[in-house]
Image (cartoon, rainbow, N blue to C red; front, side):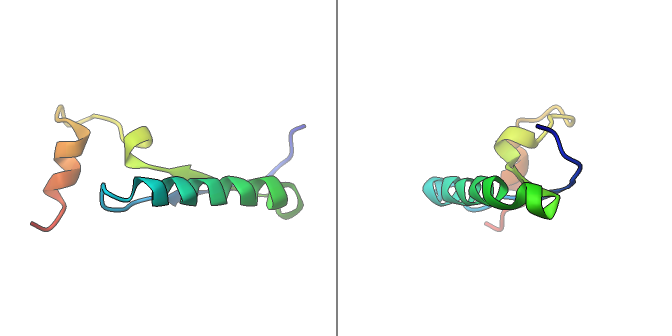
Amino acid sequence: MSFKSETYRVLIASPPDLVDERQAAIEAINDWNALHAVAESVVLLPVKWETHATPQSGHRRRLIANSFTPQ
């Protein structure tokens, strides 16, 4: 069943060794949506660079992300 809502993108970002924690954050967002989205007319959309980054620069996504990480 469809409903009108505002959609907010929620960036899930962390160091690469926190895979389980990122998955837990996504699951928490999905649980919130299941419980509150219709009543609040709000949908939270989890966004990760792994699934939402578009390769526009011609370089691999991980290499680009690493270039912004302090060494």
